[in-house]
Image (cartoon, rainbow, N blue to C red; front, side, top):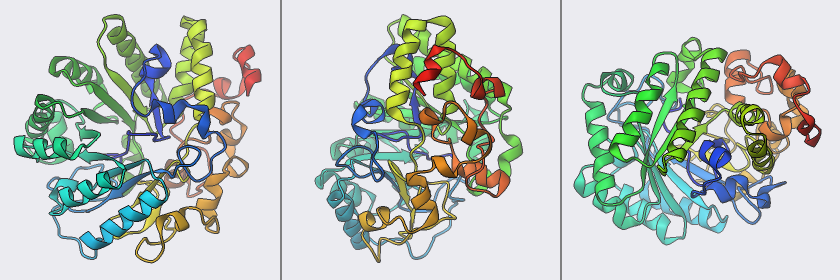
Length: 412
């Protein structure tokens, strides 16, 4: 499911809470909120390809209950070889992909990981890693640092035993925390990823406490996407009221860090209702800031899977993102990634390039469509069977999606 979603580079499923509320600038914000990406249909910005998630292996040392790849310790056949991986990386560099995110499974299990990551860096791609962190000992952290890896994202879904319940392995939290500390000790940029659901909703405050106590500079809060083993967790998602309470807490903690001079980057991922919710909150609390939030949201343009972010799985198949692996557009063994990505003959990929006319229900009628872009299609399809239906995880009220909230609604 959501365990390894990308929150790096110019990923357009990300909302930078820190940027919206505080104006702070971190890596990736220029791609997310610059006006140079308006109107693009094949990349993160003009002259660029998309951010690409490569799930380079399906094998993993853990078996998380919400893993979108349904990974485990099995050996999976027909994964891209080292030579095929390098050819794929060459194609990404040719297509001017700005960021490659090595994910899994557990990417550090792959024997040639460092060879492939080093090759990608040599081709000019910014390399990032999505990992459970349990395999990052001091030597591994050193090798990651020496490669010039831009960011290491480590998944935690709670503190202590709560995390271990999700990972299905006792001691997983302690091992991941050691991995984080090993990165921090040598100055390797690292952060946390936390997937919000009904079972760990009350852990959010503990996560904020952890990043302050440990000196962790970045945290991404993911909304649940119903894919892979996460497909069985539809009823385990938070309610709309709990989503709003979670966002209020995230907003309050972000502002508190800023007031106290703590440089923490706080992001949410995979629900563009968050951006609108922040804007509506600022209309009440800080109207001057609301104007700036609005400008940033307008530049961002909402969810852009199939445009600014794409995924390639362990066997080379190309998908719109990690959660729509049921829709395949081609294989990089047979065609270059750029050729597949710009071929709009597939109704899903072609539709995502200009999705607004295809959306239905609340999404189609919502006054915030230009700054949300229909939110997450994988959730809509998982619940309704219709790829273009409304996203059931939108927690805005009907009054908020359709009523006049301020004179700024005329901007839409």
